[in-house]
Length: 401
Image (cartoon, rainbow, N blue to C red):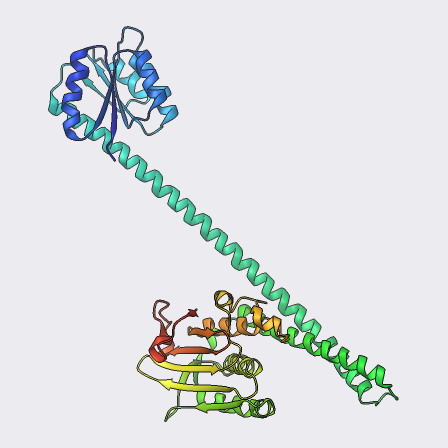
């Protein structure tokens, strides 16, 4: 943007001479022959620099410095005078003038003085801009620190509460089951039906407590400090064995495919078990009879990939960006009547972050879902700009952490 200059002088030769010199230099120049005209122009427009004649027929140019700086503190004021004195120079500087130029002056002197003044303005504006950026950065850093402290407080609070809730919930479950089995006396069919409903509600509450506890643990402890080489094949094999009965009873094929040799990842066993328990259990849960759940492990030079795919309900496109948010459940899952806490995938995503790993999701409603987990070699942090799922499956319509 061209810089704008106002020339205030009662001599036509000075005004027009300055204009002829400065316009070819790329400046936008306006002139005023009186203080009154200058005041009008200053009120209506904005100027980067004002050249002020110190003595005008209707006043002194020096008296315009204060209102100029009141409107724009970084505007540069230069005094033009044919009566240069030390006293005048001191007074002008005190009032905020940047420099003064004595009549008569050459074109080169004018251009040099103007360029020096405008460079000072540019530096002043840039300093302000950088200070504003620094102030904003400090505010953002403080806000981030406050949010982290609040999140830590929330996690510690949840951790404490869930520990306190676990014992009474377990006790209530035990008592209800004792009544259902008739170990505390005969129970009528109606009473048994009510007790079974209570048991189901307590089971849901116990699941919520366990999920909250797992989620709080991922946030309140530094799992990265406990990362170590873990053979993922054995963990997956045990989990598949544990879910095989549930899958068979539902009529869902559960398959595991591993590569030759051990697939070692940097993590911890407890976290990996929670990750794959959640993913595989969800896959079985949301896959109808006759469907299939496949777990596959693949190694390459970058690290270890694990995919968990199913032929189940799938996730609506509008819900995909929210998967992994705490307590979020896809609309089709809730509509189908499936029970859940909405925390399982939050736990998965939190552990993956703690393991410096990446998780990518592909899904199509009515056709199924595939989660691709990538564990980099040597515990290097994942590059968030690399789509690891495409390395394995070339998939689209996905979300990644």
